[in-house]
Length: 377
Ligand SMILES: Cc1ncc(COP(=O)(O)O)c(C=O)c1O
View (tube, protein in one colour):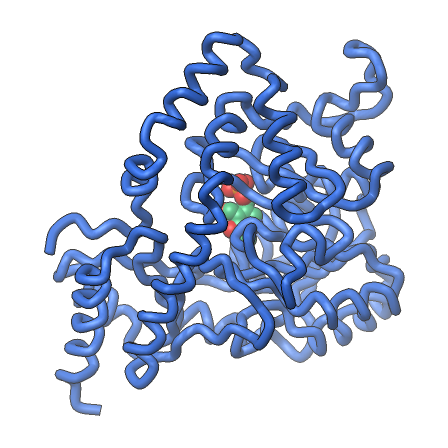
């Protein structure tokens, strides 16, 4: 079988037909490339979709995190608690503000932040003379973190709770959508994300109106009420009008795409459960299935075998953040991050998108079964 896509954006393009081309054409004709009408319209559409009061779009998901750090005036000596098993941007955004990332471990079943590890890290940070300010939970692979537990810890310790929802837009807990589960939710519209554009894009969602106004100012050079009145130091971080126009079209089919992702994930899980570790979704949780990530023995062997058969896979992420060159100076919870380390050695993500055809999926499943079936264990 040839040309199996890891994420098939062309299939989505076919489905949306000319609508995206027309949306782009509309921006070209209006010429409102920066902060044009599509940007405000998309922000409103996304707010309605999630049930969030405010959406402030920006240039990418990394900036979305940086903007949140700026909106909370984080700086040196301040600490953000970050899972060790995540994409680098979760910590990087805060490092740029001089903030200390304090690494905590993740849970072995969901790979999301471990509330017990977090609690311990908060006490230890205080003991080290640091100032705990923020919890940055990550909704890894599309499943929301345990926000009910994390919110309680945030409240007890007077910390701001941030959801890094770069991978989980469209997810929910008991019907409450990502975008409303934390004080701030940040997301990314990188093309490979469940809701992706055709370049870079991101947003911060919050119910706090005052913070939304501040975030908007921060994303536009710290502007005040007049364009050239700069009342604070900010960033140049805007979502392009063309990207917003594309995202509006994609959002119109997003709910259906999310359902299709559930079907694809369920098919994988039913077929692979006795061969490898399949993703665990908590009761009442709805994953956006940014990735279908299994855990397995001889990960490198399996990856090589699948590659030979033309099946693309990816390792998210091969190294925990606390041992990476740019981040190893930061503190780690004293009980360690063994779960993060083990995960980085055993995870493998399979092709996952709403348009994955059954026969292609069957081919992938039988290749995995063959690999383990042919081995003497
Ligand atoms: C968990 C997580 N956080 C942050 C980001 C950063 O998003 P962006 O690439 O849009 O800056 C990503 C995207 O790759 C991500 O997966």
